[in-house]
Amino acid sequence: MTIIVKGLNDQRYERTLQLIANLFYEDTKLTISDEVEEDALVVSIKTDIEGNKITAYAELEDPVLTAKRSAQYIEKETEKESFKQNKNAVSHVFLSILQEYTGITQKWGVLTGIRPTKLMHKQKMLGTSVIDTRTHLKQQYLITDEKIDLMEQIVGRQLKMIPDLYELQDEVSIYIGIPFCPTKCAYCTFPAFAIQGKLGKVSAFLAGLHYEIQETGRWLKERGVKITTIYFGGGTPTAITAEEMDALYDEMYRSFPDVKTVREVTVEAGRPDTISPDKLDVLNKWEIDRISINPQSYTDETLKAIGRHHTVQETIDKFHLSREHGMNNINMDLIIGLPNEGVSELQHSLNETEKLMPESVTVHTLSFKRASEMTLNRDKYKVADRNEVEKMMNLAQEWTNDQGYVPYYLYRQKNILGNLENVGYAMPGEESLYNIIIMEEVQTIVGLGCGAASKFIDHATGKITHFSNPKDPKSYNDGFMDYTKKKIDYLEALFPKKAQKS
Image (cartoon, rainbow, N blue to C red; front, side, top):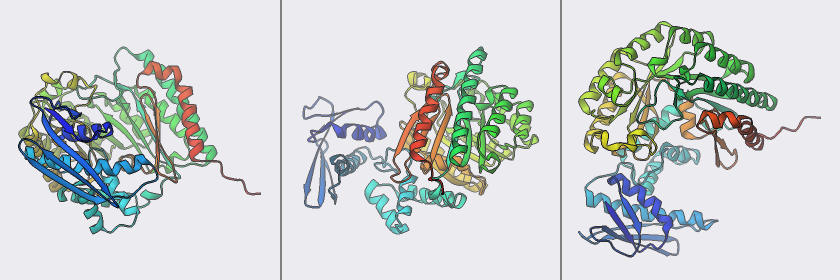
């Protein structure tokens, strides 16, 4: 689909309007221009600012459709901040035109960002009433009541689990990335390298990771900064050997301050084909009982198609093995919309999950990530259409509710099927604190390891500074000392030394 937007004469609108167009069409080419192409969908948009009011008008030429949006206009300190109000008004009318033209209602409105619940938390921190918050979300972003209800549920659970969620700035959480997996999944863009034949790279990587843990821990101890949560992700953290895991957790306890008082330590075991009795024994030794075992699907043909290289039965067997070894808080991931799967395949996956009843279930909607094998060879993979995907999401919501799970975190992705969302469900009291903290971006998270992303959050302004370690082990190994120093410099700025009492 080719869309021409006339009348704006400002290329700063283009990315926002492109993202909205992508909600309705695949492979959309959107251009802001007054030159019309044959067979293009032509939308004319203009804005008018008069006093403290901004009005946007949109018109589709064939068929003739119109939309109008008026809102309060406030002159901001910078032109960039002021322009955001223009973009919001233009987004409203553009979305309205496309909804009327296609007959498709976008339940998340003009939102294309990935963390909708942050908007509700912001209103809570401002002291806005529930009714006024709902009105704001509807008017400002065109979010439907259905999605606002979901947001309210999630925010309520988060504050139940972490009552001091808004006061965590004086602590940090730690993410530790292990960039190895048995194989690379077709939908994946995480730093994940097939581990076979790479023992030398693994050893070199782990040496760098131990250094990062030592130096970061030393700095945290010197400054008296506590750790709230620790999360081992990847890749697959259980892809390394039991001995390597043991040494890593030993380093964690020796280097980090007061690990026994950390609220939560999670190891994302993820791939069932990496779980073994000796690795579970290591987890037990270090009193780690929160893990993930991710089926993604309970259909063997699907697992082969996406490159998982483990069977459904192996998932089930490893779940029971983990239970026998004392894993008391297990998460399982399912993905809606995997190739050749529809409602019946998802129902089968839910039925199988019901036999196991993990403490939490995360329901992802397939996203075509830019650099994944699935995106690069999209013609090879047949996936469900928008209506089928929405039915699958509704089925997952009904099933989780029937089993007693509650939604507790939510995020969205670009190019996600059906413009839907990923939702984490848990039995009440079993929610992952790390998932809440990272999604709501209320606390600095220090990323250690290959491809690990750090988020440094300014205590006063809430401004987020991103810093990522390189994704490939060689680049990481070549510069881990430099990356560690840069992260400690960021921490120095956020957590200055306290004046000593005389």
